Length: 276
Image 1 (cartoon, helix red, strand yellow):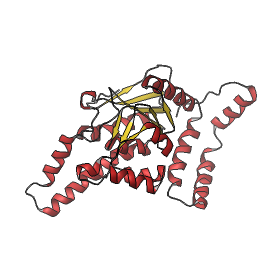
Image 2: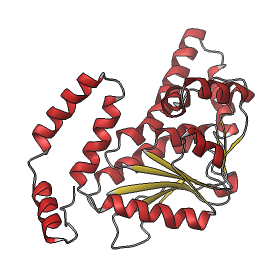
Image 3: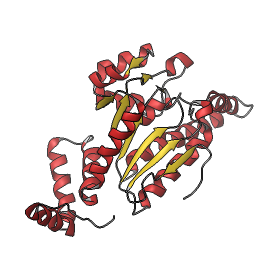
Image 4: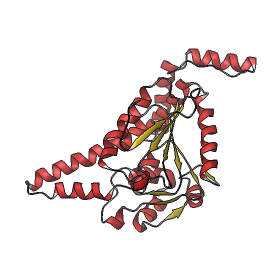
């Protein structure tokens, strides 16, 4: 596997198709540097294209999941944008930089394989951008969240303001984004931001591994198709979504996976699916 400055890809069990993508700058509390935005989509793409990968768990090394965007990187972007060039060209360059950083986060949704967020400790600013792009989210009791951008005099621009309202509702997202207040893992569960709160990081790791292994044991065509259809259906009416999934299944439904799943059910055994 490729090596990265800000990330680590780990396969904890050689017999498993669950892989871990770890934010790996623990001494900087996993703050998101400019290198991260270059490396993250590349790492996701490599996992997406790897036939041995069925599910990806996104976590953070050290005491915290992610403390947000690296302030030195933020200052560097600001300095470059305020350089002596023509203002229009500076603004156009800044827009391209923001769009590139947005694309790095959106790479989570573009990855065919499910990405599960495992949050412990701090999940601030850019960390919230990351987890709201993930397909499923879990946390430990010590986790806390904050949409911190307004305290840095900027508008959150990497996805939280677009994705969070779909998860927790418009009014609650507005309150959290405007106040930048810290909220706990338990409140995140009440809001629907996370699906479950585990008592400790070790229990979080064990629990998510069991969940991920359960997903990995299912038909990869069904799992990747379910993710794709759910994401596309966000932008559609019910009628359009039904039409889309009908078209999807007309191409995918009659597969060896279907025959294997039916056979396994009838014979009361675990199904065995080919890699994707």
